[in-house]
Amino acid sequence: MMTASVPSATPSRACAGAVLLLPGLCSTPDELLHLQSSLRRSGWHVSTPHIAGYCFDTEAGAEGQRSSGFGDWVERVCAEFRQLRMQHETVLLAGISAGAALALAAVARLGEAAAGVVLMSTTLRMDGWSVRRSRWLLPLALYTPVGRLWRYRERAPYGVKNLRVREWIEQELKDRRISRAGCAAIGVGHLREYDRLRRAVRRSLAAVRCPVLALHAREDEVASLSNIDLLARGLTHAPLHTVVLENSYHMISIDNDRRQVAEETIGFARAVAQGRAPACASSSTSTES
Image (cartoon, rainbow, N blue to C red; front, side):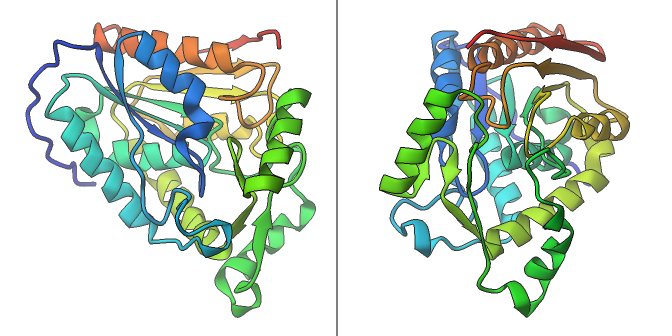
């Protein structure tokens, strides 16, 4: 795989470096607000680019969302990375859910230019406990005319174990059709391109050359811990550190373990910036709600 050329950096004196944050599919940076603010307080510049055809388009409304090709998503992320790299010596990527796969696709293309990547709730395989058995029919909806009008609709528990947060999300979805947990419904166009993205990522894991931190909830209802196993087998040229969280569901950035997610991310980013890339390891941790 070819490695993208990246302009040489002019080190930033104002902060420790930069982190490029990627939300989930058809969502907004709001689902990463706690992590954003924690990173900024720790001296990091945070970039949350709008990726046309991937992120939720607030002007189009819930029913007017249109997808673009996953290759366009990856190129938009790489372009934003190059801009950040011109100002900061250390630039990491971090993504949640589909955003984790998008971050992996980008760092596979960027090679050693990326300082590191943080993967939250990586979803290369949708096999969590709440995923219906009918998921095996998904290709029929994605790749045949049968599914052209089909939409995936969010339902309880909305990726959240914390009951108060879940109730708040449910009310937001009723009022605005978008919440910190994502859009109320995702069209087949977005899902088809994401399916293509995750397949491409699984084939290119060996191209990743930077340190990787993978944060995943044991009770993730969308993507089980088998996704961590996929990473461990596929990331043959990248040091992988995993943290299994015990008190959250899929949306770990807004659930009970959100503080731990921020602490682990900041600690990893600091270690990478100081040249202390973590060796391959795994750990399990839990935080109180």
